[in-house]
Image (cartoon, rainbow, N blue to C red; front, side, top):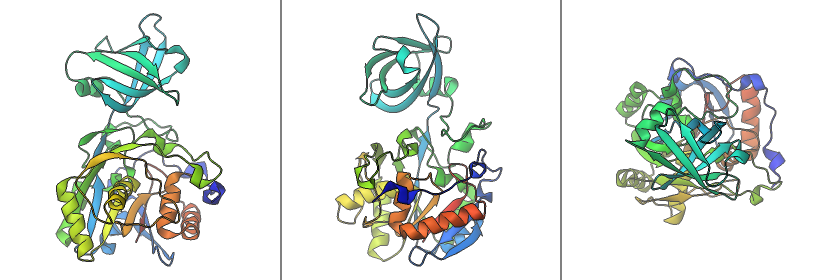
Length: 342
């Protein structure tokens, strides 16, 4: 498949720069994944499309304030360090700007010396492996000194850092938010539960690779980045019971979808309580083992995520839906509106 088949025209003015004041005030484009039929709704009407017994699976990963601004210990030159992945024992895979100034052995100082790091190695993709040195609790220091690593297409300043977290975020580790969940409030989740919808959680720590466009000419040649996931026993039991009884499992976000399908693929259509790393790439032709529906935001042209939703609902249906979303001026990407494929 040619990657160009997943391209579409998107006016820059439709890229949402700010979250809405009320999380649930977004619009919702509902699509029948079999027929492609569209309905223009408000997010608060999601409840009308869910049945008692449906299982909604959410990603409870919490975004790290992973962007650190420091200076070289020897010259004072400004250095930006972006945390990508914990390697244990205070070692992290990072992106560094400007990279040419940070060679193995370079020390970078943050704050008033509360935090320091030393570059140990250069990765194949040009990142840096660094080891941090500090006194106290690393994540508390990071909360003080770090800022949210907003996606490259958001140019506005974020006044309230919590608006780039879901209300149920708890497991620290993401470099980007699982944005489909940003539309929920605790009160709305409670309303869904009162209707009889079951809420279950998985964890997938989102990597920055999620924003990278597919650069290969052919879809099949694209190599996905790897992300860490965990599925609790309770979630495995809830989802397996729903599948056995013919009830629907609806993933909130492509991260939840990729986690469920990774494990479902490995265990013949069932979930197991486990953790690991996934680089699953879902594109048209993929056979879904677990999910029956998906709540997601609108994605970048030619991205692996547009290919994922096309696998669920068909490329022609998705491209038609995206054209309709542009025409109706839906808000796109992380702080944008939502889409329900069901």
